[in-house]
Amino acid sequence: MQYLNNQISFCARPIPEKILNRTKTELLNKNVHNIDIYCHASADEDTINSAKTFADWLISNGKNVKICVPESEVNELYFNTQKYGLKDSDFIPDKSVVLDFNADERLSDKYKKLFYKNNPKNIIGYDHHSPTTSKLKGSFYIDDTAKSCCGILTRFFDGLKIKLNKESIKSLYCGMVSDYKKSGLLKITSDKGQYTLYKTDKFLQDKNSLEVFDKLDSKLTTKEKNKIYKHLDPLSRLSNDEKFLRKRLFKETKVTPNGKMAYIVISPNDSLWLKVGMDTPRTSEILKDLRVRISENSQNVPMLTQKQKEKMKNVDTVVAFYRKDNEYRMSIHSQSNSAIKLINYVKENLNPNIIAGGHSDRAGGKIDSITENDTTKFVNDFIKASEIL
Image 1: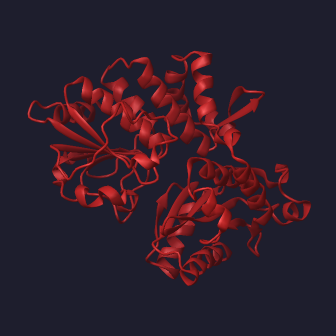
Image 2: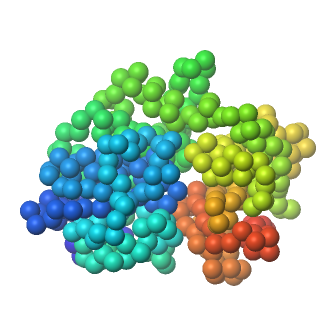
Image 3: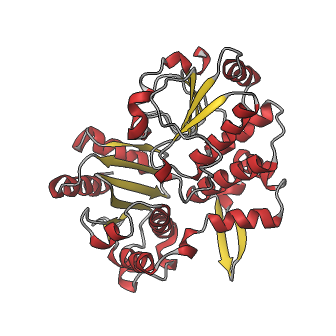
């Protein structure tokens, strides 16, 4: 599928028929029996629900499918480990499918060696992240204007005129809502267990994201959607330690001297962070909520002090630094679309060894170290970049 080797941008519009048919022909070929599906490292709802739905399609066509994702990463996601086969061998499949990422740094360490044993001509990918210098080899359809991989797959199945069952619709909807929340397209509020979904002005102006969302939303009952909203609300299920951590993080959030970027630094040896399991779905939601709230409007965040609000009145970008196992990571939300600009400046001028990428409004990265000198430099490099840009 050489036609996919370069980035193609269709703004989440229907995927061209020739691309759909060639993907279908390659994967449903009678000589193709075993197919692996790769989720990105630190799996989230978008990558896992994309994988589930794509796996269901392939399985229904008689293919043997294994999903390449560590079991430990899906325990709290919308995923049934008993239903899907997780990859646990070095067997090289006939084809491999990569969903919701296209860069080497997003490959799970558990499956990296296996992935590179694949012939690139047997690798197909669908993604919505901009390509980086570490782009994986293979045939990738990349629409970096789409706001979720589940949105792209909604177009994929729609284009092939495949009627999805209710479970697949719920899976795609879950992944889409999760990523739309991250992008600020949707807001979901809860009052005594009742959930209300709001479409932001940003969403209403994005006709293509809105169209694929409405395709799925109209096919689910209020009860079905509320169940998904509840699943996507880990803040309602926090332990006492996690609640205390959340309050503490807002209190400890700082601002760069120029007042444009706020940041929270969790030390690699922070005892409470280690106690709650470091980067989990719930702590990830805690950090995401902090980044989104402060970047959107710090003056309306009740967890901040008045002194903090005064310093943050011009903040539009928020970065969280935290440990995951033996890596030190950062995640950015930016209303001024400066996330990639910050990353590129750090890579080009301060630290070429960082591994990072994502979208202009939200991105992430890491270093393979948790030593004090390395993590301190990692943090300071982004502070310096914010002061210069």
